[in-house]
Length: 252
Image (cartoon, rainbow, N blue to C red):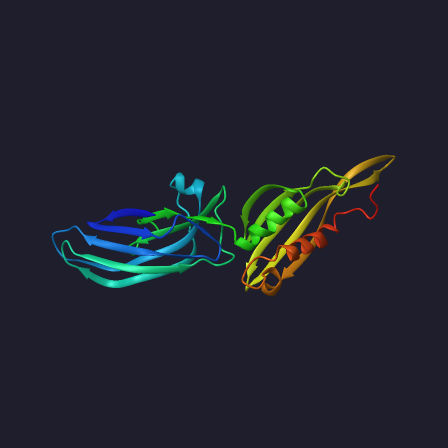
């Protein structure tokens, strides 16, 4: 990926290796500045910022505060002679629980001078969920026949909503929402099962809805096999354990 931004006779050109990334990846590239002026220019600073922003706000060019994930000051008080070029290599480590790209927003790479937030270049980064989260959801949908409805950011989690199969196994389950993240090499899963229950209101029977919660934390030694491959059998066991929360005690 490449982008160019001009400010006060300075050309800022950024190059990034790659087009898409997953949580936990590295993003690296090069930022090049060229002085197009006829005289020497001194820059107070050259910066790269990884920040989260909302697509609608950015598109409508409204004022807002970026949610900064990381800021790198590549140099300070740099004098560049006329027509000269300065280049800087940089590298950023995406956290395993960094914001993903969803319908509302995602991570952006801002670059430029000291006013990088208000007068700088910008690149929209495409960030997907961590590979372990991907394998977890694939196991959920293929082994248990659940249908994934959406993925979105929820604080420092990824929120995923799934619908159960049409079967006698889950007659009272309307949906399950999972909050997922890898933090300190642990896989954290918070399940919220939306259940239908039958209750009485006066002389009439009424269908009520309530949530049942279930929590799991899986260590790296368990969600990975030797060689670094996802342990799908173990993930299946943990999903099945959680689904017992939504299963009726007796299936007719």
